[in-house]
Amino acid sequence: MKKVLLSLVVLMSTSFVYHSKAQAQKDDNLEFFDTVINNHNQLFQMSCIPSAVEMILKYYKVVDFDFYGLQKEWQNKADGSFRDFDNKELYGITFTQKFVLPRDSSFPVDSLFQTIENELKSGKKVIISLPADGGWHMFVICKQTPDGDFVSYSKLGSHTLILRNTKEIVKKSNGTEIMTYRTPPGM
Image (cartoon, rainbow, N blue to C red; front, side, top):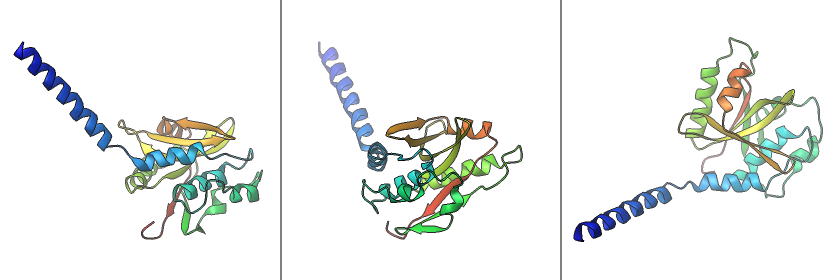
């Protein structure tokens, strides 16, 4: 009887310790990013670039959740690209277009992935262009999975899109562009 009781106490203690560690490793920043995504909308069919930029601005709390000024200005601009935001400072955050290269077998995919990884490790997100329905759609990479892939989020109207195989998609496309950003110290 004492052995059974001792085993039960050890089992319960072990369960409590694992549960406590899981709770301690909770990432409030990722949870807040989920809140940003869930409260954001892409207003126009062609406004995915400014929509992704707005998500970053909302994540850093430099604009309110009801801010859609970039998309309203852009609307359905068909000839837009990351170039429209390259070296542009918005609310203290400066965006930079990277990997503007031909999408072919010589594209430096490993360098692209390392750049994304470095940005994520520094606590930042990365805006990425990925193929979708015969065109391209912008996503925000918010984290890396334990197996090394990237998790990317976007919006299509009010519908949230989540990709967990970003690397595979990039490899099949022979590369892609990204946008990174700089924040002022302390942000």
